[in-house]
Length: 321
Image (cartoon, rainbow, N blue to C red; front, side):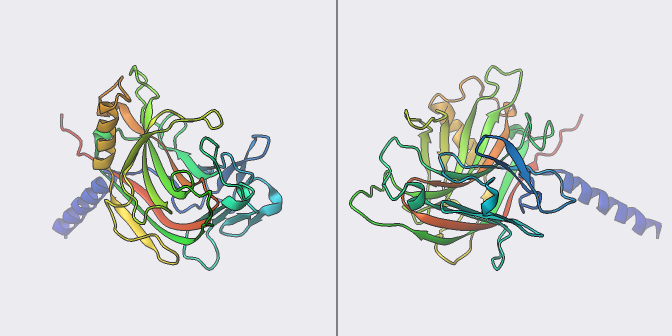
């Protein structure tokens, strides 16, 4: 009996040690804890639906949109979720009749008043975002650096509910689209580093109406006189490294795999192009935050549902003394 007790204890210790080597980068991936929204005066409000839930970590952002999730006339709060729908945007947490955690949509025709956007004009966003590392991140000082990681296992399931795209002579595929994006900011968060605060955008275009299976694109986030940009490097790998399935109406598509090689490739490409020049040390870089949601530059009326959003960092074994 003693032998079995010792063996069981050893198994439990090994199991605990293995579990301790992973860190969930995304808090509340099932969207249980509520949302932080801004009203039209810029004041932040918490919307919750579970009385015992921890404070919300997800913040909504609706840049250049006519919609506002804080408008109570378009809100419905249920026992396990929240819905908002006006003429411009839709956001539903745990939609009834749909096996999804989140449903979000943008009506580009309403947002633009039926007038095709021209180059340089801003476009509506529907984002959910959260901070991961210090400052203000849910992992705080416990957030791992890139040097700590053995892999980063990402997964999400998504289903396009609809994407109604009008045709017309003014349509330009280089200007008009609807795409659903996931971002991580890869950021220098070492306060002793000259490059503290600098970052690049690592992204996955989960859906783009111009590309059945999205692929690698790299660019600078440049602004215009009408829309401010960050001027940071964007490295978008698309879904091609993980699946050949097309995100189309009515079918769930799983996007899952190890992001770490792609994140490191993006960092190296950024360095090659002159970005993040003040530090080439992996230990300086952590994940500042994540963003998921729509950017709609055309007249598309579109909606997507997602389920099971996760990003699990597996840590390298700790070095001995």
